[in-house]
Image 1 (tube, rainbow, N blue to C red):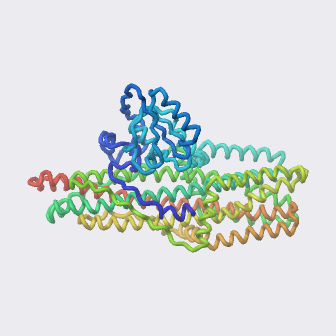
Image 2: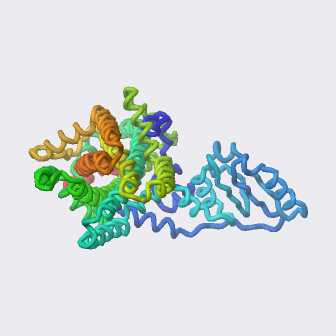
Image 3: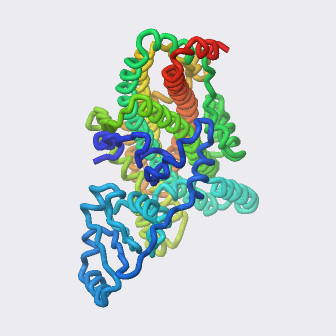
Length: 604
């Protein structure tokens, strides 16, 4: 089942009370450590908090004398193999070591706090192994570990490869390689093999970057849906506890506290901007130039100029190879740039969400302290979106692209291509074969990417609007004015044209058109017996169209980035206002006889 389509159905919004293990930045902390932390101020930066948590001294349980307790933390299929059972039996022969097998039920169903206490721990990774829970357990009990669990987490994290692909060194390496290719082209540019090689390299790199971009989109959807589920789950508890607080304050108290907290200043949500380095700022600034409608228009002007020279050049293969080389180099640059842009955007969103979650957690803590409410947060179920079968099929295909399956298929095709090289005597046709295959697949994938990008934004906006409606009931209970809402400016003509163009390109019918175009290129090349000219038919139109779609993806990313900044700022301000209300209510309840002085303080 498609992860994009079914994630919401299984995302039951973990219970996110202020001392829950699922809380952002407070993961892997037990109750005692959370009490020590005392929930950081909303103004603290996310990276600083993370660094402080990593340096927190851990209290190691005292290791007593024998028998020493050796915990075997592994799934039963792996731990209960005959070889392992024999090893465990021999370890316990002299009575110095007691082997404790955690088992599937313990690992999957119980909290780390309920796991057996051991002096030493051996953890074996396998399918279904809850690595994050095991890391939480080691932080809680601090046994002597024979395995580097954090390294296992890195090795099995697919996102690590995506982040590397979107890093500054990779982007600079690709830019440098393109410059080297351009300078070498001064000498070798007239060779057909030279043009074919850059076409092949471009097609393969773009195929790989297609997979990385799709992984980024699926990860964005997963993380944002989880964040929405957690905030909605905590918001339900806020509503229950605000009702209790309202009864404590009484009508007059609610009115007075609302007036006081309504005059409190609101801090700007600048966590994401403050944590960005110079490279991220450069990428984001350049994105507005790359994704502007004028840039897209200039691209098509260049294409028509090339077409204008067709008659002068005799419509030769060399004339076709010129635009093939140019669009190939541009596409590699745009793919690498887009990968970096999406990583910068993901870092910004995560830092802002961390600030919102810290504020939300502090609000819940204050409410629980005042109302003495210890009921757990109710799980929140986000219903899966309803889509037609064709769109669901697109989601399935996107899952294949966004996993290693797509890259493994490409590797198999490259091996087969290299194997038939001697049959073609390594001629021009052979060089173009792999580029033709990857180019055709990349053409169709570009339509898929734009469609998925549009769907992810649509689902995210829907969840944000749902959260906003629920938040309005909280303000109705407190009788406070809702903070002024920032709005995304869409009044400019260029922006409206960009949005309209993006909506057209992301429509499901465009995916169908992309599929038909791909089939048409294959039919045309087959009619020409896959000669050099025939293969160029399956290389040049896909390359031109795919580059155009990559520019549209940058335009869509810019729009999603600007919209997310406004949405997260509004959520952050609403949480600030509610937190001021709760803090002022606590002070009002503590010094009720001096409420007049409190009101005067709020006015000042």
